[in-house]
Length: 208
Length: 208
DNA sequence: GTCTATATTTCGATAGAC
DNA sequence: GTCTATCGAAATATAGAC
Image 1 (spheres, rainbow over the protein chains, first blue to last red):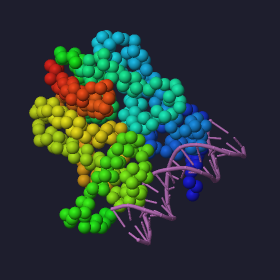
Image 2 (cartoon, chains in turn brown, green, orange, blue):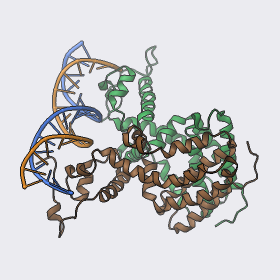
Image 3 (cartoon, chains in turn purple, blue, red, yellow):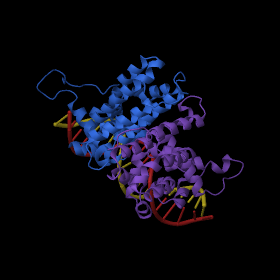
Image 4 (tube, rainbow over the protein chains, first blue to last red):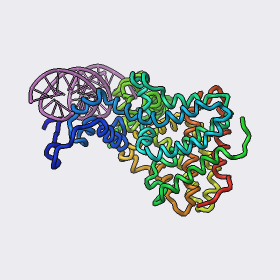
């Protein structure tokens, strides 16, 4: 039997799928990457689920890596305006503004759970993207900017640590919300997450 | 179907004790997996850095997956006694005991940074291990047990959410400690992390 | 326990027809 | 834009000598 190119698509549905757009590829890829991991997902599988052949994907994306890159850029776009707003603040106002930004971040995670999940579960794959030309050319990586924030000694260390804590707390507590806490409304979970991370910044504590 | 014939290794001879080579493989593998990611690291590279050939590795580990599995089991052993102690508590005492357990967890993360880093950056690879026979036979996965804890409706949701938050906060804030906050002593960072996660459980807040 | 050599598989990527 | 067909390059894994 032929090794690849199992069309099965023409015959499968009542009508042939419309043109394979980049967005459909990205949707299916995101789905599969989250199910199996980026590295364990082959282009053959993506194509199969889309009902096209592997070669068709190469019309839209020159390399497999470019698919992941495109998903990464979506994530990047989300974080960019938050970080831009941070950059416009001086260190004194930054800590005070942080809880508000966390609320926005929580909203973003909620609205883009799959994207954030992808990042959380395929970190090393994302880090490999750093070598990518387009990645370097078009964007400064979000985590580099966040890293500089954490390294900024003008901000008290206690606050920087709590900034890092809050991001980790949010992603960790909200990511697999589906059933993670049993049959509980998502809004309830979110409310408690907001409370928790706000507590990290309102306690009376020594700065240093 | 074990590999068979581990010749006279544990006979307390002056020769190489059993397991030394396995440990060296695991050390190098952990190193490379963290540098490049599990999937992007080939057995050829591991063998090369060890100064042996690829085939030699197969004497010690039947499959590449088994190397990752062994590292996973080390991680599992660390978390097991913490979870065992949790299981011996009833829900009422559990929340009160949590901050103390967090301190121990922080110590474990500190003493095994590379292992925790591996897990954080290769999550999807670890999840693939679930299919592994030995993994299923010998161990109940740590994250499954933690998952049941979070789903335990006998504990107030607010507390369960904060449990999840605290774990994420610790791993997120402490993992890349090397230079993450500039040239700051690790002990200082750890102190602030302890303060932060303790705050998550001492604030006066409504339970629900 | 380690080696050489090779089998086997699968994947990413390309060429060219339609 | 999608297909058929195939290439070339890895990688995992095995066989068997020493």
